[in-house]
Amino acid sequence: MAVNSVTNNSNVVLQPKGSGQQMGQSDFLRLMTAQLSQQDPFNPVDNQAMVAQMAQFSSLAGITETNTTLQQISDQLKAQTALLQDIKAATPAPATDTTADTNSTQ
Image (cartoon, rainbow, N blue to C red):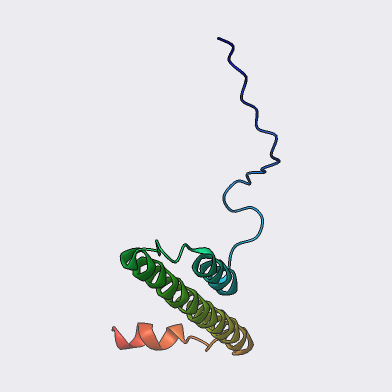
């Protein structure tokens, strides 16, 4: 009995995590819509799987919004810190009188 070799002629390119583009909300919605339009009407997607996907999408949207808000807060804090440093650099230091301290201790 002869066994034929199995070859994979597809050109699949795997990219390391963190390289390339990341999927956004519109990509997720496009994939979910394609999944719903291509599913077998006699064997639809399990309701639990659909709810899990929607929960992941909602969670992703919340995390994205939180990251945006935290970035804005970080930018504001950096600007305020720079402003305070500029004010401190422009304000002359008060002169210290060391003779007053020595006379009061006697």
